[in-house]
Image 1: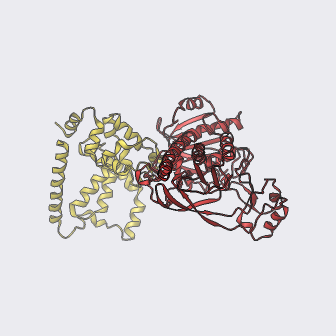
Image 2: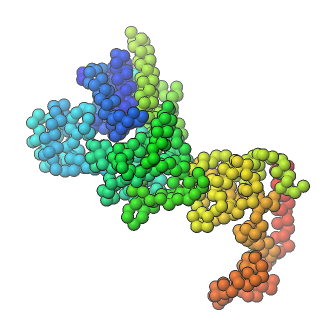
Image 3: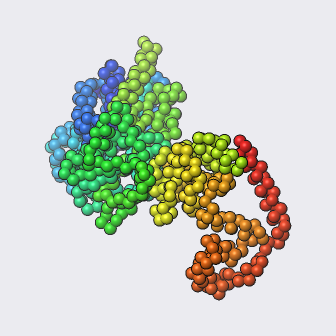
Length: 427
Length: 210
């Protein structure tokens, strides 16, 4: 990566998930200089945390790898990881962003050999696995992390563990004196692609997330199914490690609810339909999925995907929003509600309940530096008042990967138009 | 023409519109998305089993099942716990709608006459407005004898020990059976109520005439 000086013709992309990567690459491949800022130590965002994505059920590793190769080969993208934008000043064509960069304690000499991780003993929560498991305090963020470089958790800095890691490194890659830096970057246009976060399921009080161990979220279920996840790809329930074969999926957990998220998060129906495939894949003999839904919204052109799942005898659809969950004496979550087809009451125990949690924009409640117009759910709206700050991906709407990439490409084009104008004015 | 036939004629085949215009908060009915959380959250529903839980009533209204809805005992079972309102993802004021439908059915003479909640409501109102004070002895006796003299005696016998306990504790005065206590100026209370009835009558007549 060549370090280029950021100017008013540079495009600043905030967020290095699938949307941010796409926007940065699309702009860079037209010849624009781009600064890509990512909060985490590796790119890929929530897409990299999926086991498979719909509709083709391929692994996200594939799509991300293509982007990583494009990135590696493009000198126009300057990548800042562990970095967050704390302020943006100026106007269209002339912005100055303040960026805080946290110390990684590992420099570019790192070969990802893993000697530091073997030397360190301290274990810390693994946010890549939604804290379902722990990893060493010297770690590679995930198996296909880009950049392929280890990170030291700040918790061990100043302890003997940090010195052990340093001593174990044959390449002089560990630098314990790294400090947080604040840098300023100029840009003509900004693409805000900070993505989404799963809605805090504990706020849906009657579902008992946080009180009942065997009530988990859909994003956590992705990690359970993944071979790199905390269970090595086995669907085991958290309370006792028992194989979870009878699984309930509860749709609209937070979404389409004036008390929680007003909007339909769009992806959750397809995500749960997809996750029934995991159950069948892991337990082909006796795996059983039950989907509790208000109505199934197989967005886009995915009605055929829905019909195939409907035809599967191991999947049961119940038209009802579950009213509450309790726990029986063997730790099974029990769903209570009324089936609105026939208005029959049910009280049904399952091994595991998966809440298909909604998408909350990461920008919600966060003061995006500078003035931004957002809708009632907190998603960035396209508005002339935003100047040359353009939303992309899930910062603008609840989108699946496919549509997030489309949205990012559109944002890249808008940003390119702005910096082209700047270039013309300066010429 | 009875009140019922008048409105039935007016809203021929458009029961939803009738509910929207005539029932308090009735304009919310169309907002229901049939998720079923109201009936799932209802504390009475799982025990005494409403014939039609709220979201089914809403669907029946849209389907034009006028007779079934208005003569139903279901909405009379609502205890106003407000669980459904709190949980409804569309913020429908379900409790109020239930009372609204019940009141409307009563107003046009379609409500089930001997449904206990309805019967008790009428009894309470008459009891309280007569003297301006509630006469609890007469009120409970009225309810005991709802289904006839023999059943009334049986109900009384069943509650005997409770009644005696209340008398001993000074909570129940047997002398209340003869007249009972009153507010200071009964006539003025009645005058106030008469005025209120008049205002209500004009308002509702205007609504019915639409």
